[in-house]
Length: 114
Length: 109
Image 1 (cartoon, rainbow over the protein chains, first blue to last red):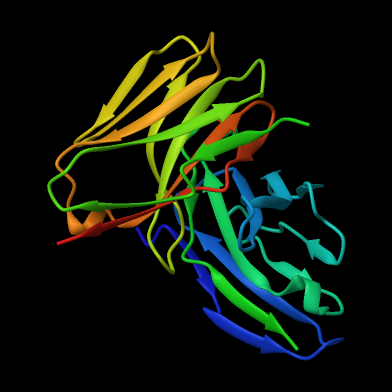
Image 2 (cartoon, rainbow over the protein chains, first blue to last red; image 1 turned 60 degrees about the horizontal axis):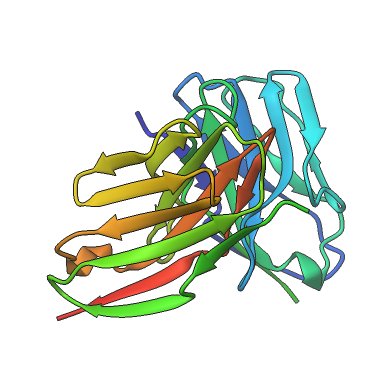
């Protein structure tokens, strides 16, 4: 099992550019989520999905879109990058509910927006 | 707003020594409390998960305790190793997860 994989590891964007952060898991987990981690703050939930075809907003969804067409993949799209979106992004998955089940995190994508 | 507060912010200890990290929370009720270890440049890894009815949970040299009455949890690390250098994050689970800011532990030779 590869677990949770994320690409790219690093990315630099200019303000206004768009891009997609990829996340995939091979554990047949229903629940997947995206977090951002900023210095001096706890991880904050951006979007999550309880299964293929179902997504919902987390604490800080503005500026981000997600879709879940398959169980394995959960990409995060930045529509028009802003410097405030400079952060480290983590994708996570769990078998069922994130609230009750062990969560597995990917290695992260470090994004800088100039 | 539900909060999870961790102390100390950072800690330096000598290899082989024990240490205890603290977590205070206001989330109530909650389904479980977790401790994660996050190495620099990596994603968090789960160490322990305790339901509100559990008092203690161990994972090797890591032992987490929970006092639901005082809304406090601690993570005790025994006989520290250089590889224990990391950030330790306390997370309380209600409908969703509330993450603390973490304690950065440095273990030096």
